[in-house]
Length: 388
Image 1 (cartoon, rainbow, N blue to C red):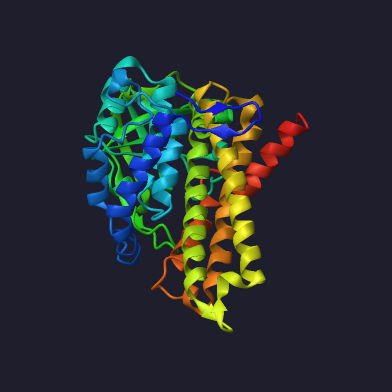
Image 2 (image 1 turned 45 degrees about the vertical axis):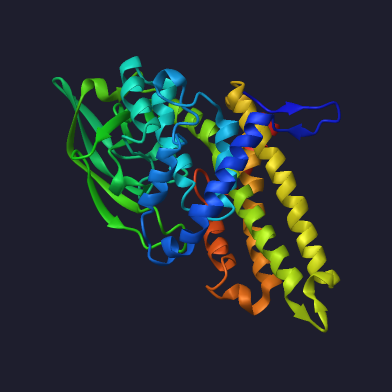
């Protein structure tokens, strides 16, 4: 299922996609919005939101029907993420983190792995996490030092990972490790490491995005069966990059939703707050900020929808990646700017925790960093354009 482009080049969601958007928006307005501030302030894992998504069959939107999912696409997943992100930045991680963590299985996994792990995630019976980053290997993913050595009918994995979101509640983690260290990126493989085989370390104290835990992960002689390797040995880096390409529009969708949430709240506030004898919405300086927020959010949305549609059409390889990077980069930059401008529209009130915009501003910063910083996105875009 995909959206359509009319003769004027305008993107339009079809009826079923609009119904999905309306459903998730209403669920989020009624159940997520009242919880968002407490989730952030208390650094509280939103188990109730997970159960809400599970009960409505929303956790497997992108999972094929053969594995218990809805059989929709990345576009529909982005539509759902966007609507939830208008109220809360933490709750959509149940879509985006799970999407990224399952990409290696979906791309390179065996039929048995897909039946077990994709089905488990789609039904809400398994919670995944994804682990590539290490203390000295972030954007330089090929420089990881975690090692996996074959020992009889098992792989033994040793290493330290960091910034692993959802790891403390994960039933399994898809872990990158080097099986052939002398081959660089071509020596990386991915493994399914179940709970009990890894140790969770420090819970990071984050500026924003405080509801879903982000932790260190230690693999200390972690032993997994041979069949827990995902795909062929040494293809892990390629699989990871393709997985990032598939999942990256979801980060853009979080940015679009956050920006739209800022515009919604700032516009409503501007209509009610008076200064110099009239609502501040009637002051041109405020109108210009709101107009910019609207234009940039609309542009970001179209970029994200296009990138998601490209992924659903199979166009997510190296020659297409600059479109996907552009969507993630522009949408998350837009989110940051919309949050800053939204706080400015509210003035002193925007700086207070009584209003959600200071939370949105803290959350927006994360989006410019994760799954490839926006500087990395710009490098990839330029390299593709210049055919480097």
